Amino acid sequence: MAFDEKAFFIEKPENRPAKFPCPRCKRVNEYSLRWMRRTKRKDRQPQGEDRAKFDKLRDHLLRLDDEVTCKSCGKKFEIPSQQSLLFVDQFAGLPNDEELEREIAAASGDMEPAPEPKPAIPARFTRKSTGWK
Image 1 (cartoon, one colour):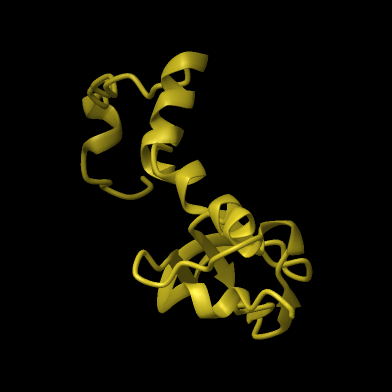
Image 2: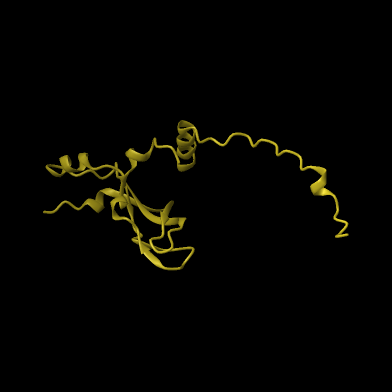
């Protein structure tokens, strides 16, 4: 008898944002991707040798979308397949994209300093022209 993995998970659909560059126009846009969150059921646990397999299962996200349409040029392109399955316990403590960008900028010294006030333009450039004489 085969181990039916779907019987031991609760599935909930979920949308998550992701940034991808379009291979055609090279612009990076944010897309909303559909994912299926699968969490282990506590009330339905198998008996016997399937019990060992069930104990090894982890909560995870399974990506449903394989391609998206570029928001700039309108062409469909495929999403990299290496990110189609994410384990929930691996990304729970990760920082979000904005925090990560700020940390990288701070560490590399690329933080934008406060803009220096521009020097005043000399009066000879701001006077109204009287025309040629």
